[in-house]
Length: 445
Image (cartoon, rainbow, N blue to C red; front, side, top):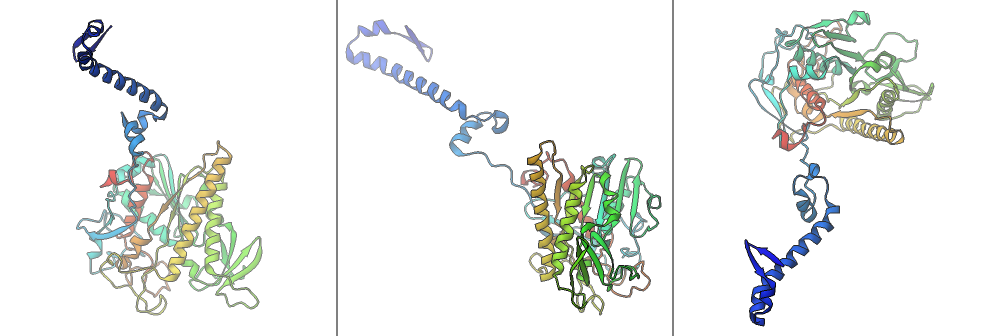
């Protein structure tokens, strides 16, 4: 028998004739090698059952994984946490290159003297938020449709998106094919990409009317409203099933006096001043309105789209309330940590996010009960922090409301161009394919 060691051989029979001392010297390396080989083969066969596929860990990664723990996945970058930094070329369009800007948000058209508010860019902590790429967005939505459901701030975001895209594909206003209310409801069609962009005005998301129901007068800023909390607003619920992306939002209208109904029965009110009606927190109505909205979308059998919750956008009134001299005359963003949400605004934000989490869990439960039901995708557009830090981004006295009797400053809506364009940078980032590590430190840093 011969065993090769480093290219040489040893005759074991000849070795047997040597003295014991010489046999030990010659045979010891051989025996040590035999033991090491046997140990390796034993360990290799024993650990083979522990090896995950190399496609998951990588070549020989099983050894590192076995003795040093699984490799951590790349950390995700939270693009919604950060600060505003100077950026001289932050704008994507002007009021001249985008003639579709509403007068209510057209600050440059009506003579805003400062332009510093146009020179800031959102920088997340620990990573970068890519600039808005209109062609990439249009490629993603080619042959599809996007709808904004909510109040006029939601429509404000839709108009921002319209301007971001209009420089690359000409949109056609097709609103009047669907409604006679061309102010509160909008539809645009990009024929080059077979893409539809829409806005459904539903300030409470649920069915709402003046109280009492036959009171008339329309929605005003002080009118007492009746909300049927368990019924979605028909204007969007009857149309939304065929859309591929739905961005839901709302908030400011819930500051007004409201009467609440459930199952057709009056259950109470918030700041209504009506005798013998139980006072209920406005946040209860807000919670159930979002709960109804998410439930409605999940129950629509034909709806296979992606639902986004765009979080609460706080106002920036200073020096008085909105209807008594309040204004927003700042020209610079707040620095990180300089401002916090007011108590009521925080409650709106917290309520939204909690209901979003409940909707995610319900979607998961439906999927686990029925494997054929892949569930629906829900994603969060947490614009609250970035928006809170931009008191300089509102029209103030320069926005011309379509309501002729408006004589107050506007510290709720956003100038265009302006900070609201960043909301659509968030939107594009969230719409990118799931397999792309869009939010990881590894990808964006």
